Length: 379
Image (tube, rainbow, N blue to C red; front, side, top):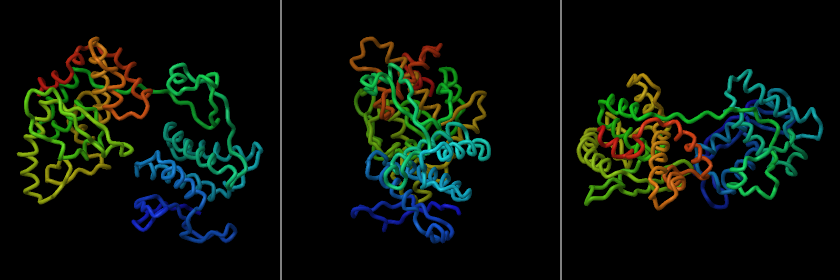
């Protein structure tokens, strides 16, 4: 029996609040033994998704809703197709192997990466943690004590538990990879290789503000303004972000000037030709909106055929690494570099921002000292 994930309509509501596009987990076929009819919602899965994504108030992204929904759908389909009762979990070693067996199948049969498998397992762990006492009596895995590093103890306020926390024994070992970023010379080669003026502006906006790919493609038109005076940068708000959390970014004056010119010249002409009315800053070559979930921007970078790898997220890492190095070297700064960068990048935890400290030591150039001015000089 297969589980299908459907998209809710605007009629789907909870406590009089409508939630369109919410994942609905339904069964594809009848199962008389379990009292399941085709099209029936999986009650346990829906209870968890509503709690995790809506009631807790911590997940605002529709993409995350669907990620959790797909994780559960794949796991529950695996259980049903193999006649494994995912509801009746008793405290014995055999039942504890349920999720472990699924984990091993993900890697060996489905070809999923370790990171993707662990992401799915985390959702399943939260699913069962929520279900204990509701539709299951125990967990299909064991908990083990793990040590927490000193930096995590301080930032997560875990000192009182002796530097220990409990985690499921399901997770596969991963080796953290360093984020990749471009050197000063590579930034210059990249910008020099781009002949399309609009694509060059898009790359510059990523390199000089650290926004994500989706944030770039949905960048608001209304924040672009005509530069006045001798301002160093313009502070603008963006809300179409990861988790839909509004944050402030700083757009350098020279870049704002070029974006203003683009809006009133190239973009205006494209919009006149296509007739498209859009509140997004960038339009495609035929005057259409970019698809925020598509890969066209990444493909455009790949088509440059550079001797080094470039991806949209590498542009973000490049901004973060060079800017942090420059800020750390400005001993007269009146603010904390890591906190400044955390706010610009939109990280919920400063521990995520701290990973760039390790990358700073890899820099052998001095572009970061005046990062924004150096990019202006290149273009």
